Length: 393
Ligand code: GLY
Image: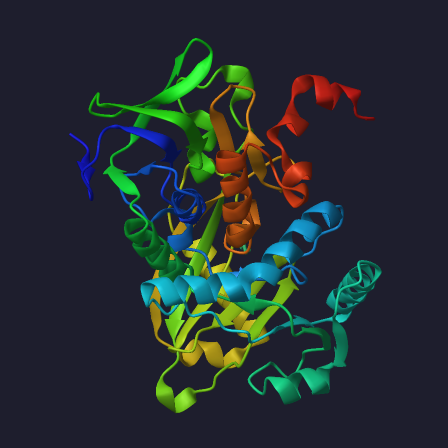
């Protein structure tokens, strides 16, 4: 039998498959709109948020060709202060929301050339980002390596602790009356060409008016979803380290520091409680979540080049998670091609950042039947075969 934290019937207005931060924020916002809402997940609050560093990095994670995604990222970043305040006031949870800014640095001449281009792109997009010399970077962050050649100061890119965020969302859902079914969803059930609920791994059937598929990297393989409508979401492995900064070294870093070293991204995210998160590898290895010696070595090697003192710190955790990657790195939001089935998945590198705007968009869809303006470029239909065939090669 599935275990539930509150006891109601097995029929709801909204049934969310997946209790990661995207599923939870969807459920919370839907319940706030008066919809009877349930979540199916063996471990609500788990998923990629257990691994993620929690950078809210709309500007420093800007990639070429992602200008449309940038608009959604910026909108979500804009909503973060109110979102975090609301969640904290409601639940009493401290989310570790830290408006600390980010410094993106270059270690050699090639990095510096790349960073100059990124700076130009950021400015073309109207973003606030200031070029600093190596000396100015070290004045801001004295632990940086003497060889740092320059950097970008982005005061608008912040951080949150995703584990705390997930715990707060679980608490907010509970307060809003969301029912948790702590089990795996085995398959989607459809009746007369309409999503009607799910069958759990133990055979229990749950019924709902609307079903939301928010299962992160696993969203692309739920049985019962017609093959052509399965979201094109794949797992992208990220290995992440957690270290602890002893009090005597504090403040080790005062803001997030990141760089591209040998083509790979490395970032160091310092929490107020002394945790220092170092991430992340990006590996296309299917469902593999092994922490490898090579992954840990690369992260430590690159982090050490940036901040040599890191080797003094206790290494407290190594972990790998799976980002839900989509073909254009942007999420799939809104109604699918099957009536009654709504998607909230494919957030790839930006799940934590996009949590507020996703919750709001899903609430609009579920309660009001319309996707808000800012989410419209991200409908699942952009990946329909017919739409893709119309696009120029
Ligand atoms: N957003 C950080 C990462 O995906 O590694």
